[in-house]
Image 1 (cartoon, rainbow, N blue to C red):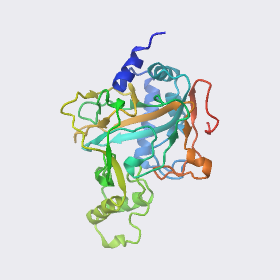
Image 2: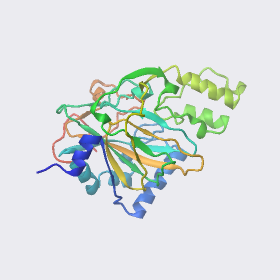
Image 3: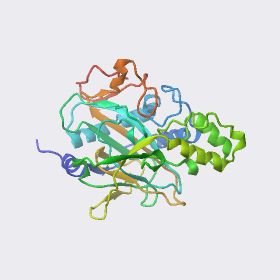
Image 4: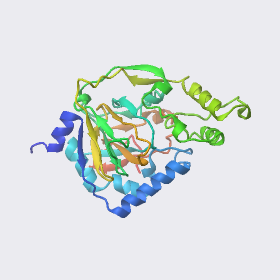
Amino acid sequence: MPASKEYNELSHDGVTGPFPRFIDDQHLAEIRTFVEHVIRNQPSHPLYGTYSVRDWHLDFEPLLRLLTAPILVHAIQRATGADDLILWRSKIFEKFPGEGPIDWHQEYGYFDGEEAGGHRPALYPLGPDSPWNWTLWLPLTDVGEYGGVMEFVPGSHLRRYPTRMVPLTRSGAFVDPHHRVTTKEELITRAKANSLIVDVDTRNAFSGINTDLYSFAELSALLLQYCDRTLAAVTEPFDTSSVATRVFPMNAGDFLIVSERCMHRSRGAQSDAPLRLAISARYALGSTWVYPQRAHGDSLDGSHIDVAQHRCVKAAGSSFTPLNDYL
């Protein structure tokens, strides 16, 4: 059987789509409302015991239903050529009006959190050396060119770009919370609750500090100093002047299928842009071992989350490693 157009495009460019929306208005609105609730109210994740933007599909059935919908999973199978797939992670992405870009980066397969100062691989491939993990990107709101649009470098998934270690606040994955926090009290509360900066543990940011003696601006500066004690990986300066990039303005509910190795970024949002909400989901071959450190009694991942209760979802096929825990 000849390879599909989507397979050829993903193999050549590292990204394919957008695929048209398939869920109805009510389902999309239900998920969008829930995601905005999570972002604005920061509830404790029932599996992780702390606020997290990850893996709400394991607790919120409408999101699980979206990410395992046969039409979506079949599209991933056609694009990747994989028969057996597990859904092992989902993540909420938000971009507030006026928020800056997330810089160029690629993930080379192990999801160890190195871009945020972590060093604990989340995945261990037990199958072939060919690609074994892919990303779904699905916006829950319309995303225009000036509203935090995604941008990719076609073909960049075919090589690994060099990285270097820098203070965390200079990492392309670091999101400065100043667009999201407006008072001293909120800064302190969210830092202690670890709900301030995605993938960064801030629970001890003000440990040993009498916060009553500092202003909001002073505490904000101390927070950044605290973050910079951690080193994070960034891609070496990446010049796009000699390469063609591709941007993907998208309607809510449309989706992309991406190699996580494809160099990508999200552009900044103008101050008058609407709040951008999106879901990413990670799918791996059924033979992939997820969070292998748990076999040794270590359940912390590279983002400082206790993943002891994490479960994979059998998304397609019938052959899955018994080393994982499944929903």
